[in-house]
Amino acid sequence: MKQVDQYPEEGTRTFFYTQLEEQVKRLEAKYPRRPVKTLLSLIFWSVKQLTASFFQSMPPHAEKLEVGTPNMLFNIGGGIGDIIIASTYFKELYKHIGGTHRFSIYTNQNSMSVNGVFNRCPWVERIHDKQATLDFSKFDAVIALGRTPLVIHRTCESNTALHERCNKLLQQYIAFEKDIPKFATTSPTNDTLSVMYALMNGHNRRSQCDIGHTLGLSDETRSVMVIDEDAYVILKTTGLEDRTYITIQRGVDENRREGNNTRLWLTTHYNELIQRIHAEFPSLSIVQVGRENPESDLVGIDVDLRGQTSFEELKTVLKQSALHIDGECGMVHLTHALGGRSAVFFGQTSVDFCGYPENINVKAKDACPLWCEWVTDDWQDRCLRGFDVPPCMEQLTPELFFDAIREHLHTVTTEKSASLREIEYTVASEGTILFIGDFEDDAIDKWACPENRIWHFSMKLTPESIQNKKDRQIDADYADILNIPMKKESCDAVFCSAEQHLSHYALREITRILKTGGMLKTGEGRCFVKEICPNQDA
Image 1 (cartoon, rainbow, N blue to C red):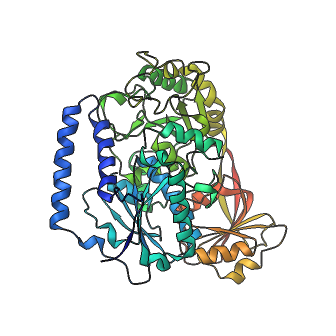
Image 2 (image 1 turned 90 degrees about the vertical axis):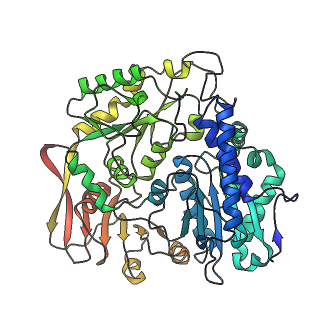
Image 3 (image 1 turned 135 degrees about the vertical axis):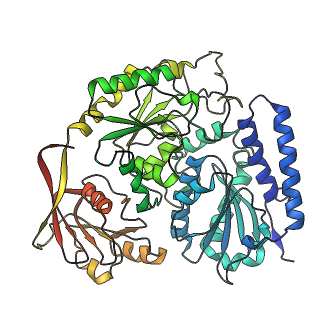
């Protein structure tokens, strides 16, 4: 039997215990104020898990990788927003510790959504769903990834296999928990304190798990969100293909299946906002997304897609949305990962901690003195100040919110559409130049000069090749052509490799990031220039 280096030193924390914590949180959210129902469900789940462990101590999906390939298991708690934030952490962790490592993931979240987040990511070895029974001694390291990483297990003889950088990082995580154990062992009830600690140390929600800023996570760091091109058919079948539309959701926590939530904006406020949008911007379509339930029924919706999309289809709908309107929740994180912009109702959670800088983050002035997330355990069930309707939501009026988004809606409904016109090949202008796909170093290096900023995106890069390009003043990262992590109109030229498939949607994405007059050269040798279409609204 392998010697086990387990933390905490008392050896009381096991992977089953971590799973148990997550199950307790899920059941308390599912059955608020029904302790007997919660207890009975928890007993049934525990018996099922322990029985499965007895008869299946080493299931097939817990096999180790080939000798010499470190395999780390991450247990991710929370909702889909937490999964998306974790995906950004994994990408930077993979680049930091080297490409020989592989990550396995365990989560209670919907498997379709989790697979959609990690679609084609080269560092993810396997995804275990909530039914899996895992023998964590088969992994080189096990980490519970909540707001901060908690090292559950490490095998001593795997120290060499995990490599120096990885072991140093794990030691850093262990030291952090020893220093401030409450943030790791009592989440989420101490999340308010962890938020305050994070803000004081230069972190927000996206970088909170980056202890010591070792990985360099920031608002500029994007998760790798690959889109399956087949999912774009949803735009044709719903008539959204050539329409300018915005998306809207009324729902903030997928794990809470029963009752209302203090974080939800009032239905009457939603309906008045929709009425105002239609009155001033009649050409703009409003598409509702999310889970279908009576509490989310809204008046004035043009296309209702609640409960009718797969996760991949939802990604395509959000990708093409001119603005997503929502509470502070996972779909806002997803929209950010897709390069979109959201307008967000803020009340109980901190704008400084949770808000993305590119978003329109709206909060009622003077409604409440502070945010209140996890000040009380039932903060999502009742206002801690005793109001039937939380002032932070009631006083965030439709008029206030509409005034905040009006300028953006005017821009998206009046801007001219753009197209690519084929031209004879010409030398690209100096500036920001993007290479996407597989390119030899020589093809990229010839454009490297002080006047140019060079980017290279590919799903086939390695951490070593990314570092090599960085040493040569070339920015490189993982990305797919349907979701390029660059801002609108930010490139002077784009070069695509011969292997890169340029579909209608790939060309649309390239058009988005090209400046007017910018050039596209395909692997087939064709050359295009971006032009603004005259006398035609987008």
